[in-house]
Length: 224
Image (tube, rainbow, N blue to C red; front, side, top):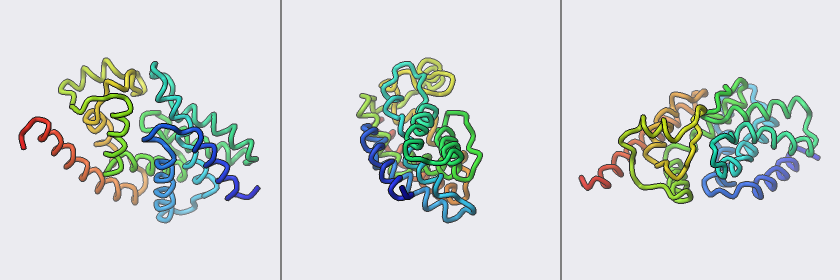
């Protein structure tokens, strides 16, 4: 089986697995396209690692979304699920381990630091899709899915203490809001990116996001 055929098989698995609107195949392809873009500005990138990792990075996202305990980490579980898929497609052991590393290290709060250029590119690409115009759209798709309020949390410290676990996972997604996500996650994204091209893109996207949330807050408060 050649590489392109393997990729098609992976896409079919992912398509059937991902049913969450904000983490569906559309998100996967946006991340995939960003990976291809950023890889053009980096040296010695192995596409046989990067592409499968990009396609499989959110394979366990539904399990995490359905978990009410906050204990399931989709990056960790996803790397395990991906291994089974890759073995069925007869990937070599070293490729599988490198792809698994990309997947387990792509999550913002996981604590597994990307060590390879492929892992850094995937991390950056996935983070870029949560900010900017696409990030705003995805955030409110999730807010609607989980019945979140269109509001902001004035006592952020109290919220973090009561609705998160040690790794930053949410206990109850319905109590979250887009404003909280912007404050505790989105604003930090550009400073967390690894590659120069991603940092450049990230800065432009976060400026747009800042303007949007400031405007939304004003409208909710009835200021203008």
